[in-house]
Amino acid sequence: MLMNQIWIVSILEDKPYKDIKNLWKLFEREYNSIGVQIFSHPHITFQGGKSDNLRQLKRSCQEMALKIKPFRIEVSGIAHFDKKVIYLKVEKTDSLIKLNKLVNGFLKNHCDDLFEYFTPKNWSPHITLATDDLTKRNFRKAWDELKDSKIKFKQKLHNLCLVKRCPDGKIKIAKRYEL
Image (tube, helix red, strand yellow):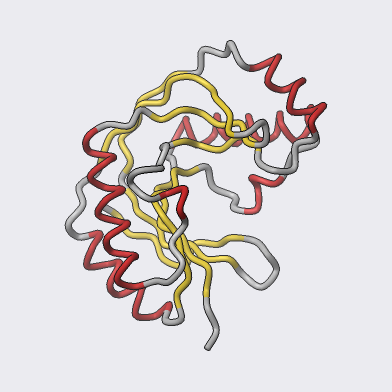
């Protein structure tokens, strides 16, 4: 049985979407980092796993999305994981915590091999700017140049997306649900 690697995310909208895409271009140009662009949309990830029935998952995800209202995110500052990933910090609000728990519970019933990083106890909401393809030298250079950035914005998000890894390695939207 073919297992699809999937995630549930929310894609940024409007000006923040464009601003993050510009930051991705900066990371590509200045630090030779394109790994984050494997999925072409700036987003927040809630959880992921493996599914052998994408069609059923799309239907069930639609039912879950009907229960979710648009939600606000607040981005404030830049941080990193393990000197490999540079990201924008998203405030971990009560509504985001509830949404992460809802998505985790949903995927636990529909998928195998959920990602430990995105479980409620480990989840740190963020928007990735650069990922594992940064060299140590470029990580230091990027971090030294950007660590004091005062990047801040608030946005209401109106979508939940089921995304999947394709055979070419890219990640594509399987289904978008408007909230």
